[in-house]
Image (cartoon, rainbow over all chains, first blue to last red):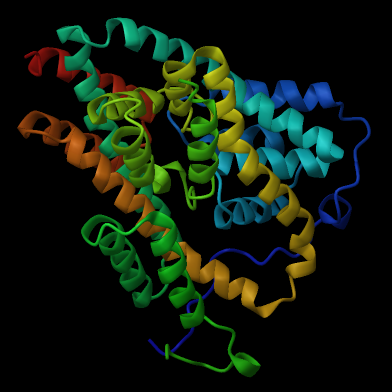
Length: 211
Length: 174
């Protein structure tokens, strides 16, 4: 308990400064259309969640637009900002590649296939959702989704936990929302500030436990 | 009645709550769309959310279905923009400031502090959804089996959701 939680999210030190610094278009050979189609393909094929894995294999392995280190840095940033990982990554990567136009092309591309699909699914559900057969199937779908989200949350938690106090903040958050029925922003700010103060910067890298 | 302004308000607000993932906003999504605006019922919301887990791309695309229900194609477009623009702008700005914040000592503290809170928010959203989705032994079984399989294998989750649909068709017919 006497060491400060080691920060599992790597500190963003630029691996390739030309890719990380600012947001000037560093790769003029990558066109906006290329960015759009690449993210469109990721948006259309990343079935079953886990968009991050698809992003990595496309951006790092296939296109070599980013190196692994930069990818992890951008991912860490995506995770600590509000917004979905997939869209945050699209904005950050798009911006690194071609500035604001790249960011717009990337987020539009990654959202479009799923949006069209859910538009159609919504239409179908409105018409056929009341049929007993559809309802039976959908109950199973929703139940499986609960299992999926719980598994994803647990896997995410495993990666970011390094300190017993983390568990306290998780429990406080859950109690705030589910038991005390406080609004999400209220709990986010209250527990967020508390947790941030707990992990506040210590002078001279001193070993320190919580307050 | 024109619902577009309400859609914009609700979904741009929800946008900023998605800390750690879309599920973090689920409790508020439920309150605002089901209880406050009555755009759909809780079971409908849960069904759509479940279906949304099978769609590729960012996993909150079920919001498009809600927009479509409330106000047709314009509703769908408005919801999409309202839900993604605020966080996209924030991320864009922070992305450019990030390197400058690199030396700010509190940045690490905020990152460290927000990590468990975001896990808690995801868990809270999951519990809210479970209240509506797990209604008996069969649904509880589907959820637990899906959970266990996902922790033990690298199977594509979309297949398990389809499996859930299959079990539902067999066992949950009223």
